[in-house]
Image 1 (cartoon, rainbow, N blue to C red):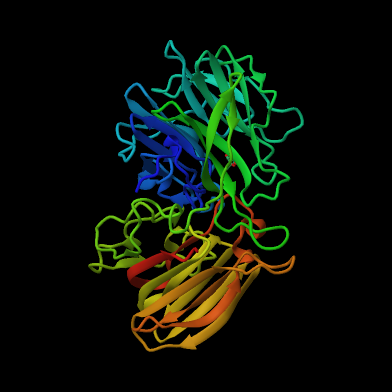
Image 2: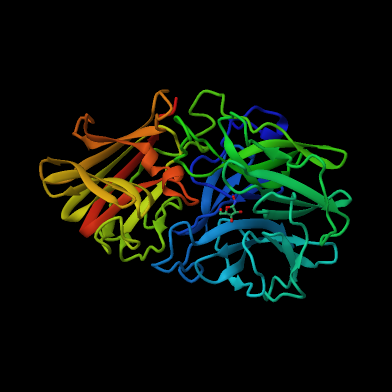
Amino acid sequence: MAIRAEAGGTFGNPVLAGFHPDPSVCRVGDDYYLVCSSFEYFPGIPVFHSRDLVHWTQIGNVLDRPSQLRIPPDAPSSGGIYAPTLRHHDGRFWLVVTNVSGGGNLLVTAADPAGPWSEPTMLPGVGGIDPDLAWDEDGTCWCTVAGVSQVRIDPYTGQTLGPQQPVWSGTPGAQAPEAPHLYRIGGHWYLLIAEGGTERGHSVSVARGSEPNGPFEPCPANPVLTHRGTGRPIQNTGHADLVQAPDGSWWMVLLGVRPRGGTPGWHVLGRETFLAPVTWADGWPVVGEVAPATAAPPWPLQPWPAEPVRDDFDLAQLHPRWISPRHRPARDVTTGERAGWLTLHARGDSLDRTDTAFAGRRQQHLACDVRTLADPAEGRGGLAVRLDEDHHYEIEATPGQVAVLARVGPLRTAVAIREVPAGPVVLALRVRPQPPGDARTGPDTLAFGTEDADGVFTELAALDGRYLSTEVAGGFTGRVIGMYAAAGTVHFDWFDYRHADG
Ligand code: 6LW
């Protein structure tokens, strides 16, 4: 059943759970498309489709070829791809984005947002992150970046057509004016920005003017959205984009986080995408409640149509949800070697290395069960929860043995080791929220173990989830759960991801 947000139906947030920050949205006819930042991961920039702004289905990745996305092996985690803007203009889709790990700002186009997207047009004259594109009535293309400054560009060549000039620096005293989006709405040009930093102070402010390049008059009600200083379960709300529904209603997509546990609160899924209604008063946007999910799970936290639990690796191409740090050479991560299995060839000897062969998907639920059937006969590898090279937990199989390993900052330890029968082994992970406790209670617990042929779980170790949180690790991403090889070749027959929220 599709609940149409724009028809006043109820819905819960987040609408795109897990590490999906910096959402940018556009509508063509009855179809909405949305993109997010992807940082060090390849392929880059997941693209989603929806008919109702609530249920999103991934239809591809914008940067899915090495010729479009180069992230050097030594690029830091949380480098790479920041903050895309997606627009539809003149019969095609335009996406502008920054690769902070090489090349800077770039622009790609597509007839179909599912791809293929073009090779990048570089924007060497545009300085600054969070680029936005807007066209005025005479066809001039304005590129606006964090700061906030603006320059006219030729989007076909990437050349700038004049000086880059400051347009609005946001609320005096607020840090980090960023994530600009410029819109022509009614008789005004609106400049929507985020300010206050992407942490607890995050907010959305707006200014308007009669020309696309200002001068801009700030909204007297700024910030038009912030959860700072509140006890709401959704925090860090900011980095927003606006879209109008076919029925004329307005909506905002934005990022936010769900910190849990005691103090200071830990968020483990990264920054997620939320939806809020927008009305207008005196020509200014008024943002309604960023309502947390109230409906019974699995709706609406499940993508719609519901995602199958199992990936069988029966297809030549991996589903677009699978991502790998920095690059994914087909020779190292392939379904073409053993039919119906995903084969990984080790590059680095552990997940501490930036080049380890790893294919994972975002953790999207506060509680989930994950399992994979691994065949380590020719190597060593397993099932991992990765925040970055310095923060990951894994259950690793070698022939006849499994071990739970933990890396937290400078510390690396084998937490538990057990003998198992030789041959393929089901590696399992159960993520569960921590029950309410005292001020030091963590967000969740990650229990690693094996499963026998009857599906009976034997726990090896249960680890505190706070060490795989953004508050501990830093950065812009969230947990990614997947398979890896740390020596030789490891084959995986299937991978199950099942939400256990509720
Ligand atoms: C992004 C900036 C931000 O470029 O975080 O929350 C940065 N906003 O706008 C990385 O996502």
